[in-house]
Length: 124
Length: 122
Image 1 (tube, each protein chain N blue to C red):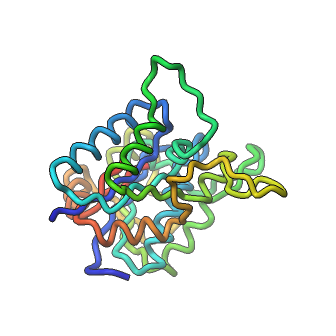
Image 2: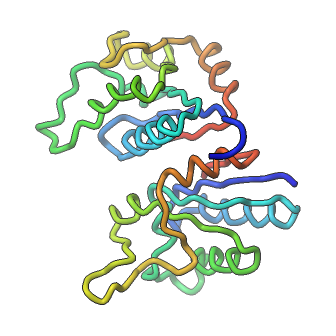
């Protein structure tokens, strides 16, 4: 089976994010094993629980959640990039998080791991 | 770590301080280097501004991440390529703040870039 890793660096409202979602789903449907998606730079904003997009716009968060649920797709979040953009799993005393549950907190080492394992690495 | 080593090209295409792209690319380069991956750096377009010598950032309230380029050699990142045409278009001299920079014409630059298995662009 072919293996793929994808790096997402664009925010939820970018059409490149939509392209990434379409690309990944297409690969999955064709039987490619997607080892994981790594969210870096503004891509980490895709993990926010506070996104509010107009109803008639593309709901990227819902699509990431769907891909994760339907295909057990691992979603890796660069926590350093996330914290720089106001995302955290430890907000004050109540240990609240504004990161969606589907995302796995990780570091750049995870990207090295994915790059090393996957036959192909694609960045958007 | 896993399977066989892959060669990684990190292509820098943006100027250093107007966005975080250069810093983000450097962070990735150092991580790949620390995992002993075969990592090369490429500078093209406005990315060549990242190599210009004697840049000061005190008066623009930025941390000068370019100083960290000096660490590249300790991570065995020795392949550093810059596009000659991009330098010429910006009338920049071959005067860089790090050693071991190889200036390549467009064909050579392209050939080196295409010989890597993974390309990450910033």
